[in-house]
Amino acid sequence: MSAPAGILASALVCAGCGASPALDDPYPFRCPNAGGHNDTDHVLRRVLELSAVEFPSAGGGDGGENPYLRYRHLFHSWHVARAGGISDDEYGALVERLDGEVAWVDGHGFVPTPFSRADALSARLGFAPDGGLWVKDETGNVSGSHKARHLFGLLVHLEVMERLGRADPAQRPHLAIASCGNAALAAAVIAAAGRRVLDVFVPEDADPVVVARLTELGARVSTCVREPGVPGDPTYHRLRRALDEGALPFTCQGNENGLAIEGGFTLGYEIAAALAGGPGLDRIVIQVGGGALASACVESIDEAVALGALAKVPRFHAVQTEGAWPLRRGFDRVAARLPTDPTTADVGAALTYAARHRSEFMWPWEEAPHSVAHGILDDETYDWLALVEGMLRSGGSPVVVGEDLLVEANRLAVDATGIDVDETGSSGLAGLMALRERGEIGDHEQVAVLFTGVRR
Ligand SMILES: [Zn+2]
Image 1 (cartoon, protein in one colour):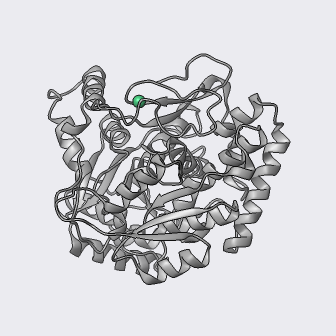
Image 2 (cartoon, protein in one colour):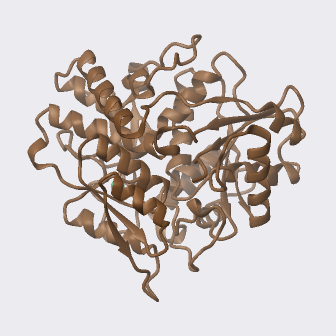
């Protein structure tokens, strides 16, 4: 996909139907054709005119700079701001001011999170010295997980719209999210930093400690009951109703807000900056719930390669639990449409068919799932198509792991790295261990995982 010719080097384009929101739409979050009665998978993707942008120069790593500042020229908001007459300096000052507000609420703002070869863990997993496991540690990020990355980009966008006069700061719509974990905590921190009202829809069994913290941060918490015979997540149904009533999606679901995926691109950019000048990664193994984290990684790493910042595209592997694996189910159904030894054109045709027949590939998981990795138990993988595409095009695959391995991976993660990650946060490692056991990952390969959330 390339950006349509126009005044901006950045465009939001629906991967399902090709539509774009109006250029002056202050809230270009969802495909204008979404919500209709057809079976198309409407998700906006941020697409750059690659010849018109540059990845910040390699060599010096990332210098510890706020990633939304360092990579600002790659953000849709920056292109919209510049086209509307906001200077580069003004935009930078806006990001810095918001980052300061985040620091005031949460103790610190955004800086690149650690990413390095985990030597002890690599040895324990049997990797050779020239191969090994790299860990991106998100447990010390704002609000204790990667989730705030997705939402800070959104806050910047909302502020830019007000600066351009396209939204009225005196009449800010409420923000809304469905979550009971890291996403809700991140949303509450970022909304508080932006002085915006946030509605959080949580399930009945939400952790009272999390609910107390959400309330402390000023969020308005509503409990949603799962009704017998109604498939899908009840908190998500409630979110949809709030959005229909005019709330803005402050969520980590790309189908509701494509710009939330773009905020997560900072992860792939930081990984690319750390690996600049080297051979790159052979694989990246990422846990998947709703799919925002993984699709952000897939798209940003693809982009970094296209911009010459990273040597090659790694094979992507998406990890789900035996409790719920709607992505693996969808992947298998797309793969079943392919001939043996498919060409690029075969893959493209299968993906186009899948984009227009969503219900044949993705629907809510039938049973109420349980797992120690409860943060990746989404009923649906909302951002499934970008992941199926990323895996098929890179020669990767989905992997489903059991509870024993999730527990073992977490023990190993904490023991060998000293990072206080929870079971959801180390579930990518469980996937890697499953692939190692099957002999699919060799001793000399360079592989990355993300430790996404701190134990609470
Ligand atoms: Zn669409």
